[in-house]
Image 1 (cartoon, rainbow, N blue to C red):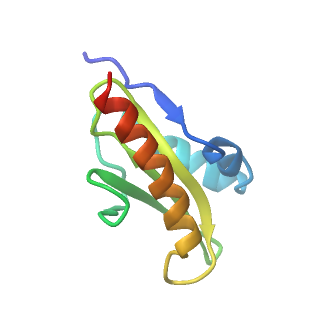
Image 2: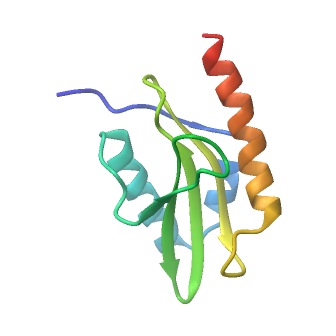
Image 3: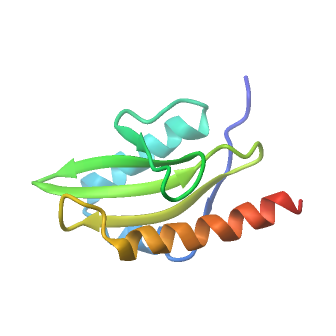
Length: 113
């Protein structure tokens, strides 16, 4: 049995996730557990605009949309780039920029290890 990949929370992604309602936190934890074990989350989509391999876990609760962006393409760890509540159909440029900045820092770090 292969070991679970550890999760590295980037920036405020963990603190942001903790602000979600309990049901959403539970669901996010379950979905990330799937990813740690090499599976895809149940509801996700690729977010190529941020970087190669970036995926977004999609959680809906009480008419609200919650997102957890992560990258699992590196062999040693999973990085959670950003956790946020969507306020509109389209992901805000602020949320995209936060994830992109964090992604670039990680891609740079990983390429030097």
